[in-house]
Image (cartoon, rainbow, N blue to C red; front, top):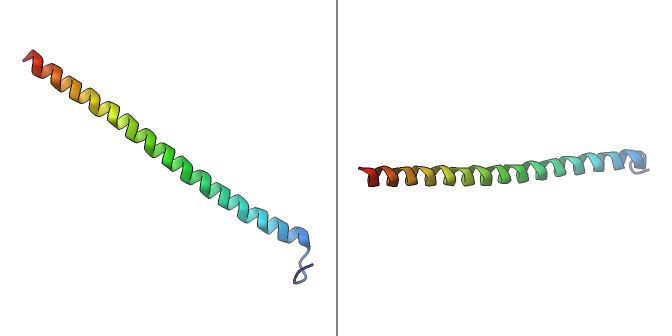
Length: 60
């Protein structure tokens, strides 16, 4: 016992902090993946707009 606290209580506290850290890492990784997806889809949309603009310019 450290400071009168059983060892399993200390382990429980350590696991709670580890769980919080892992959740934070997962949330940050998810945000990065989501941003990459948004950027990729935005590029696809812009490319479609440019192709449509070129097509309309050629038809005119």
